[in-house]
Image: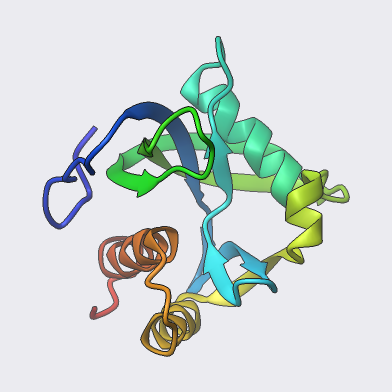
Length: 172
């Protein structure tokens, strides 16, 4: 898969481990299915960590079903890989090397209630269809008005701009 980073990911000082993840790109016309998180006031792609022994596509399908309630995930096509290093919050390592495998996919049929993890519910995470330009503008405003330049939000905003440009032919 192609690398989506604007520049190579630079390791942070200290110890690190690699965490593979998946991210789903699900669009309809000019909208994209995203997760809005009230606690952070941001939009992110559905997805998350790959469990041990789980394939990337199985992880993608599981995460989309858990976070959006979509019953059927189809037409899974690789889009690219986004690599980053973030500071880790546990004492076992200083940093985490996140390798996000991004896939375009479709969802069809009915939706069930999302089955989010406890921390996702506590953070007020909800799936929403959003105009991609509105999601980008919102995330950029959050980045501009925040003391914390969260790497996750930076990644998500960069990915949304790339999706808008390449898949929706919008100027970004």
